[in-house]
Image (tube, rainbow, N blue to C red; front, side, top):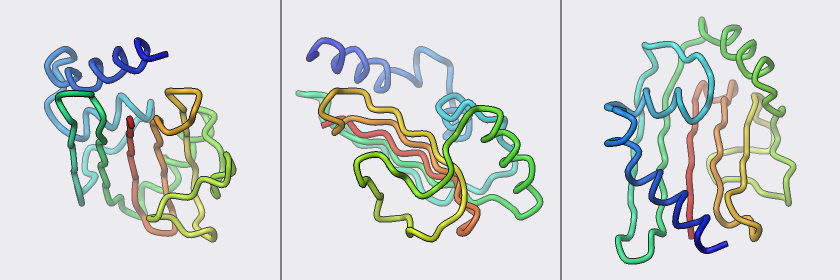
Length: 135
């Protein structure tokens, strides 16, 4: 269990160097699996990891245009995203409202469900959220 978390952390922390990723948008495309528009507006980017134990998070928020709604919805359906609201274990990130419309993909990295990768395409807010946490 601990070894798998360490491997996931090492891959996330070293992701930029190993994959040739250079921008938050490139990371978002890889994590989400979605074909994202290139003109997404980066609204927020936080990337904090503790060197001694690998705990940390990466949060990225993009704003998209209304013209992109249909393409993003088709991509979410094609990639088997679930419809909001998030139903797993009552989990609801602070940046979502129970009435928001859109799609999400939630992948738990560990059995205790504290470690996860979450992608949310939120049509109510016109935002794409990417959230990775390892604790």
